[in-house]
Image 1 (cartoon, rainbow, N blue to C red):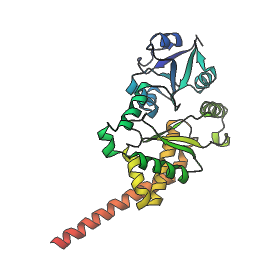
Image 2 (cartoon, rainbow, N blue to C red):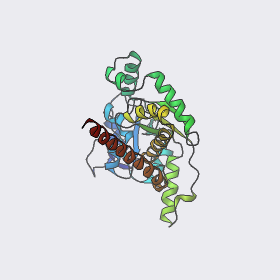
Image 3 (spheres, rainbow, N blue to C red):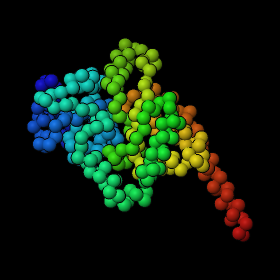
Image 4 (cartoon, helix red, strand yellow):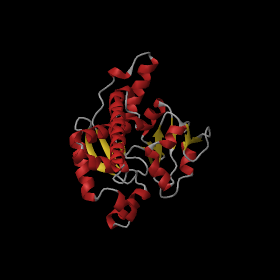
Length: 263
């Protein structure tokens, strides 16, 4: 493990550091080593999993190889510190704890007016889990997200799946015969406009709300590197685009009729 070198979120592109160097720069209260698997540095920085680390100003190791991802998942510890993947639900970051206190105290006025109330969030999570029972094992709220609607956490088979996919691809095969994807734990951002919008739509247009919820889950799978073939989303994306086009056409036609009546 002392021979492993990686890029980090606070370093420059191409700048490699060892685990020893990473630990030497950790603040005294940090007991864990955080790492994130992504295809590239750009995608790692844009990942929804990075949002909580950017808020808490914690450095994250970037891993671009499925082999290194598999090694880190099985190494588990280095010099007495736990190696934690960024997709863990419990990261022990101070920022998340503070956010929880703010929500309980009701001191975050901006979020209270725009986001779901605690009761609405509970209702939404129950609906989300029931509606997508074949894909979702658990749905709960989180404060780790800023600009993303949801993430998948605690996927125990993530590193193994990515390793198997790499091996199959290198041998000229496909990942179509890989092990079945288990149900996922989804953490939603109750302040995000997409989540708030789906919450209101589930009564007005249940079918559209279900399609949007399913797309949210697949987006989470893409962000987690767990979706074997993104082409499975194309029919749904086409339906969503068609829905948007039809709604805009209806609004334009309605506006034209109103203008004619006024004239």
